[in-house]
Length: 521
Image (cartoon, rainbow, N blue to C red):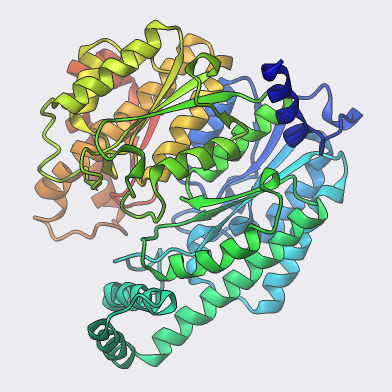
């Protein structure tokens, strides 16, 4: 009886707002507008959905932001409006539809009336015909500790670290947690940083926050079936954290079944695509979460401001699932590899040696146990930032478990990793073995081989000795870097993954070292 009541409660929460219409039956099509054309935002997300049997349509590449051009909000909207009647659901980045893309949201000089018009236009998307589900994701502008053009305004090259520190101290001041010494430091920073820089930063952030607040009306009015707000790179004390606290007050007034707000940006598209698949299929997958020994779920990862336990639960809800404390109910186990002491170092840190610890052995033993019980397991490897835990990957392959997983993720921020592992894990049940294996191979080659190992090796052996930039590489530099990257990935990964590694290309689509695209030849 309790189980029946539980299922009915979930049905009421998730499905009463939806009605089956002629337009939403008999199709298997999703329209998707990504943040930009980076592999994790576009190709990897689309390949995941296609592997799960979904027809995903995306706009022409010339409309989508890339490393060398901004996105075109007007063309993107026209494309969506013309096709809305053909789709079960629409998943769109408001950053793309309003600013042009994620980078443009940080660097634009658009006036308020243009931003308002574009936000209000997005609210009308559902009325374009066909009555599709409309899922929108947006971001709170990040607070990077260090960055530079073209992904930030040019002045970040000189003032980035001090702008971050000023934002952190202003956040502390707002929270009334600032010390007398820190007050003096804040005053000094405010006097040192050029006023024009402070004004430009404040004006853009204020405009973006006001525009995001307009999108909340889409939840209130029912024009959006779901709104997902991500906090791009942030920290427990930062300008982004300060803005997020104020936004959270507004979000809490809205129904939680229609909106979520948590850390991360690049994973949001796949999370909402997964939600769309669940909703169109009228499914509520149950997810059991398990953390590694040590600080576990209380870990607050680098680049984020929430404990990972909170983030994991929020991601599950946003992806269309439901967290469960009962393993027997679980359709998926989300196994989260956290650092023993709760401190997420960079994957390039010398401590990421691959030495197997007792914690690693216990975590892998747990994964093996879940698999033996017939559970699908997705591993979110967040022990390090910006790359995999070498010890974990080594042990997974040693125990012949790596290729039995429903999904694996170990890239970029913890939220990025969590979202991708969860999204691919939830969709894995609809994939055949070959497609699931292909997605796993890409993640190991990207997150483990490149991000945790080859990227830093290429910096040390090629980029830094030649005084090349980390981003903005010219054509010849890109070609030389790609050749070195390909050679080193083959040397590292072939002994582990076999000859299939030679069937992939490794390229730098944004002419920078931060991300690699792993694609079949």
